[in-house]
Amino acid sequence: MSGQFLLRKSTDTVFNEPKGRLIFSSDFESGNLDSVDEISACSEYDLLLRADSNNPRYRVWFYFSVRNVKRKQIVTFNITNFSKGKSLYRDGMTPLVKSTSRPTWQRTPARSAFYYRCPRHR
Figure (spheres, helix red, strand yellow):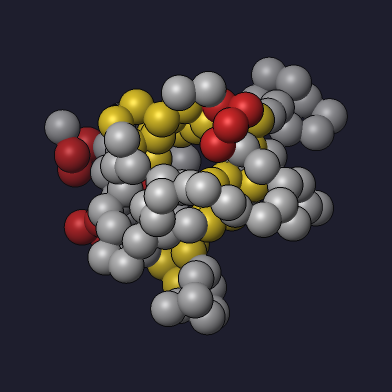
């Protein structure tokens, strides 16, 4: 699936999208999502990040939004070009999430986050 179709402005209205087919955006300050590819229908997405400001070699953080989520939907995000091999994620830190059901920033549960180079998940 084309990344351009799934990556939209946060102000765009979602028409004719089946509930559960995620709509991504990063058109806000610090948003750095460059493209999205749907790998498995409504359940797995490859995400490509824009390079960090002032250093095009690195991609060490991510910030984006997702809409059109179905209740209790389970989704896998593969950040394919995250370039920090030694990060706190390897030591058990998990990403922060905020949503309508979580109105304040909260860490995802450790059982919900898996990392390619994390010794805990080999």
